[in-house]
Amino acid sequence: MMKKKIGKLHVLTDTVVQCRFSHVQLTEMAVRGGANTIQFRQKTGSTREMIDLSLKMRTLCAHGGASFIVNDRVDIALACNAHGVHLGQDDFPIPLARELLGPERIIGGSASTLEEARKCVSDGADYVGLGPVYPTGSKEDAGPVVGIETLKQVAAQIPVPVIAIGGIDETKTPEIMGAGAHGIAVISAVCCRQDPEAAVRALCKALTT
Image (cartoon, rainbow, N blue to C red; front, side, top):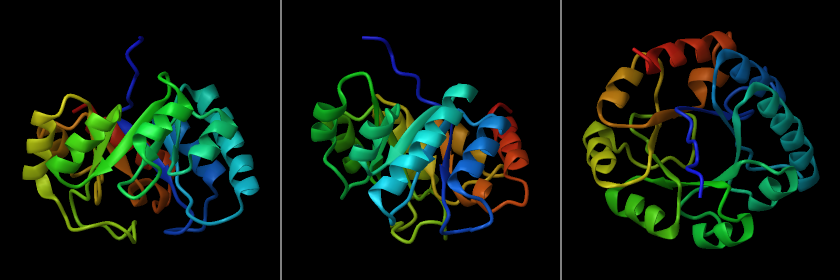
């Protein structure tokens, strides 16, 4: 089976922490800025509306060569032919998602400990989103800060890419990558900036220095 390409910069679109930009606008700007993975994250709203949004975002990602991931909602991912899903500890079970999505789609799992990360891998996740590494105000359901040491431990001990999330911006990215992370996932560091496209460019630069 072909090795799946897991991006290094995951931008989670969000219209709760800010309301100036829509999911579609954020996708367009993030892809233009160089983000290689877009994750659609919306906890409320009708399923029909979410499918409509996802189809538009999926098209923008396809044009820009980025992967499109849906947070939590396997049904939405199937409906819009997304590249995959990202599932939290209390979301849809990873093994069942794999049954529904098949072997080719990307499945990411959230973890905040080495034990949870190992469970994600044994369940069949292609990558693990670990966090929050730093304090964050972007996610109401974010747990206690895990810190750099846990990131180092998890990155060293699990066989799939680790994507760090939580309180990350361009100034903290070098420390994150130095700890062994494969990449980063951000919300407010892009969505809440005056110029999201420029923010993505700054993050891309930080990832390569």
